[in-house]
Image (cartoon, rainbow, N blue to C red; front, side, top):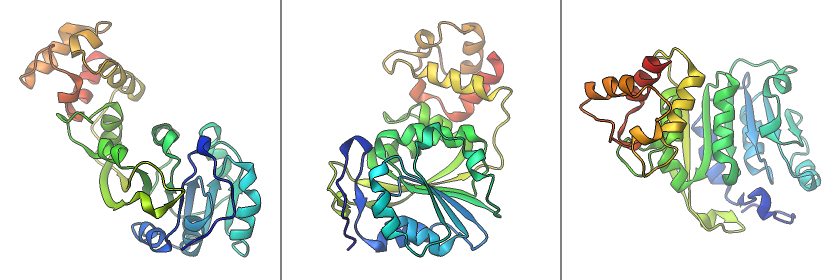
Amino acid sequence: MEKYDVKFKKKFGQNFLRDNRIVKRIVSLCAITKNDLVIEVGPGGAILTRELAHAAKNVLAYEIDLELKDELEKKLDGFSNVSVLFKDFLSSNIEEDLSNFSYDNIYFVSNVPYYITTPIVMKLIASGIQFKKICMMVQKEVGDRFSTSCGNKSYGSITVFLNYYYHIKKEFFVSRREFVPIPNVDSVVVSFEEKQDKLFLKDQEFFEKLVRDSFQYKRKNIKNNLRGYDLDKVLKVLEKYNFSLSVRAEQLSVEIFVELANALV
């Protein structure tokens, strides 16, 4: 079991993995080669970072907590292919940070800080980077939300976004007891692979705005949430699928949202 000589900070969502068998299993989900680069956010105590470094040509890690510098230098001693940037990933220019690296494929593999999971995912989408695979450990309830289908209560705007861009798979469950300190939630490892056959969108930004607006108030129907849109056009699309304006957003599939966006833009 891994031991850490650090002061854990709740504000950064720091819960470090203890069992190396779990990180080996995470890395095995990706066919990373010695020609590939991996981005990691929140390396923490470097247990996953080291395993990634054994598999990849380079690992680019983002760590916001400067006080972890000594621990990371100690745990990564001898790993010349790991670069740790001590800055906020969410405000970073990823393409600029990647400019000094050469690689065949790029992966994102991370035990992400749970309090910024959704912003991280949205940044990956917005970056336009063609990740070979994204593999991350997230809070179990969040993993359920990512991979659920329409009609379920956990289905939301992030579900629609992710399922438009990626094939999503829940890989395996991780108990809260595998972390130090022990968090209040269990976790799940999820993987995303970019869809090569994405549905045509006239305007990606408009699609994302429409989806957010549709889920703005969970208890309200489409008619109320989309008051600022052309409801006649909305109704025309909905009627094709035997829905009315009284339907809630959680009942609508990704395909319907795409058709709505294309009809309204």
